[in-house]
Structure formats: C-alpha cells, structure tokens
Length: 223
Image 1 (cartoon, rainbow, N blue to C red):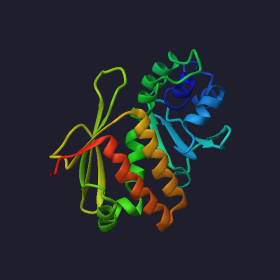
Image 2: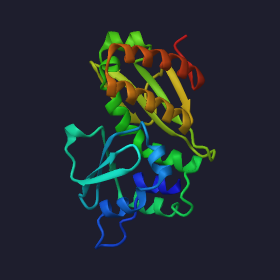
Image 3: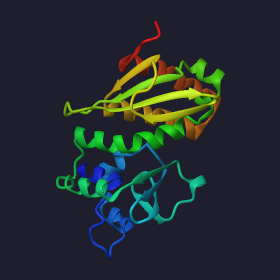
C-alpha cells in the first residue's frame, strides 16, 4: 500500500514529458489503494503548487478515473500538493503496501482540506446543531505518528458562525483528541457517508457514532 500513499499524496513528476496526472494514473490503480480511499472521497481535486497543474480523481468503487482540471462544485475536497511531497512519496512505492507510517503521511496531507469541508456541513456549522451533536467549539487534534515521532497538530475553533482549521495549538481547548491514522479514517468515513446521504436520520446516527467514537481518542478538558 505504499503505492497507495504515493499515489494520492505524493506522486513523482520527475519526467518533464509526463504530467503528474499521467504519473498518478499509472500508479494509483491497485486494489489496495482503491480500498484505502473507499468511503474517504468520491471526487478529489489535486493541485500542484510549482507547476500549476490541476486534475480530479474519481473513485469508482473498484478503480480510479482521472480528469484534467477541477470543477470545484463537483469535487468533495481540493488537496494542494508540492513536488517535494510527490518526490518523497515515490521512495515508498516499492512493495505496493501501505504501512502505518505511510498512512499517517497521507492523512497528514489530507487532514486540513478534508476537515475544512466536513466542518461546513449543517450539523457542525449551525451552532445549535453543533451543540446537539456534542461538538465543542475549540479543540486540539493530535494525529499520532506511529513511529513515535512528533504528531501533526491542529486547532479547530468555531467563531462567528464558522470554523477555522489552524496548524498548531491555539487557545484553551475544551477537548483534546489524540488519534491514530485508523481512528482518523474511521471518523472520516462516517462523516463523509452522512454528508453524502444528508438526511436527519443519518446525521442523528453520525452524532451517536461521534459521541461513542470520541471516548476512544479524546479527553474533555472543560470539566
């Protein structure tokens, strides 16, 4: 699954005559990678900082399809990447498997853009619904690195009717999350499913899941 990682977050664009889209297209089509991103996105926009390239990856259930350009209203997330990200990940594409460390690297790149989108959903962006779901207005999130190295840290703060996702620690958190890549993926699949179906019943189910899930990876600091 190293190929998985490479594929989606860090693909090689070393050959000047081969676009990053074509490079990804050649690497991403593995059963492991398709499964890894199942339930994480349906349509993912990718931008490359240095080259200005942009393309969309469509998750078809059993394969990926690629399309040049991004229509923002038609994608679930847009992930900005740099060539260095891509080159770093190419080094890990030897055995076709995704290790825990590689999963962490993928999620470290995806965390900010995915979180910004999911926090815009009505159940989290409307204040009374946010409170009903039990979501605090200021949290610190540690994405734990399986290697024991420094975690990726973010602050989520709800202010003036909108969420901010900031790298680093700010303010006095009402809840602190310390989650593994597996726990992060579980959460992402649940909220993405609720976003896609978008009914009151499924948001209620998500709220029930969330209150149980957070017990496994967070501490309430407001009491």
